[in-house]
Image (cartoon, rainbow, N blue to C red; front, side):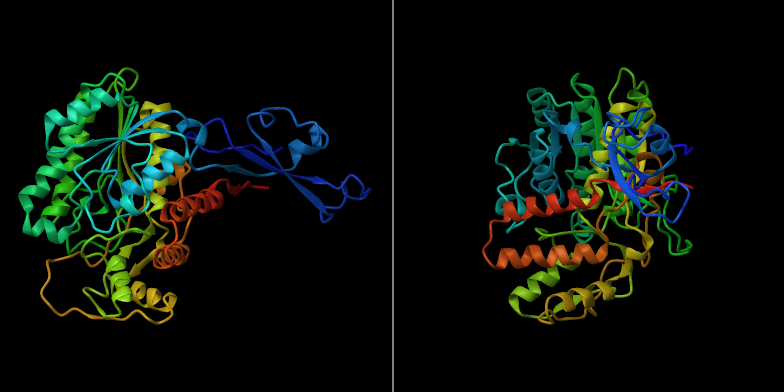
Length: 435
């Protein structure tokens, strides 16, 4: 008889996969190679000790379980849930807002305007059905008022100054937004009794990526650091989150539960951020001009935006269920998807039918880490999370998204369609059981 072990963090939902001998084949029970039928059953109704009426005998069912399947994000958890999302007008925030709305969540958004023109926020009509607060996270009183009005149960803090080069031009503004903005959000959490869960999003650049460091993926316990104001601000933000958790949110039974999520080099349709590879390549393709690429041999953990967003949602779910899940979590791609900038540019050129061109940028640039990768073992083992789309999937979906924009399609429908495709691809991830 098989023993099912799905991980201590898995909720009481999912599906079991089992095989049964063909009832019309008299030799099936004695012949291991005889044809077998695969069945899927819900754990909520039958996996805890009894087979469904249509299944074979209980003995056969219990001896033939071959795999366990589970959804990464539980749609029932989010239905009707009150969520406050900071930075909802940004690239990641807009994708996450549309996803939450599609799950039936009651979403409030807090942002200081729209960061780019064009933007996914405007093209996708992301503000439809969202209670919006035009607030700068640096404004402590305004943040407090927005929390008091929206009374959220779940807080997803994404608002940030996200660009390395801009941090070199405006270091003070970067620290004020990323560090003090997080302080203001956490202070508002302390003042809002309705809040039960907080997920704060920082960056993979929060780690101390010294030139002498071995080329190994970062784990959550590695030292914080940063050699530019942006990276340093993210390391500082992680220290702030940890201090607040230890000082004010340590009693998870009575206080909000706080987790931080680290991901980076996120790509996807609707990104028009400055000095970012994919947006620059798309702009070059649209304008029919070659774009300049710096640091082509630098290795980055590229991943589609929906991969880490699924991790943020999953983290919120398990924080709501168990206080011991507080702390930091990496959400990175599989090792094979950590590719050089050159590989990415060449692959995008291939997918864009060769109409995209790039050239090496020889101008001086701020120092950037040559190697950056995350170890997401903790999220895989304790949250049941793993990337759904690999890098090739991501690049194909990105090209499809921008072509749809070029062809004048409804970009809200296109974006929701990609969310639906992602959800279907990762809805039930099957893990084989030992024989």
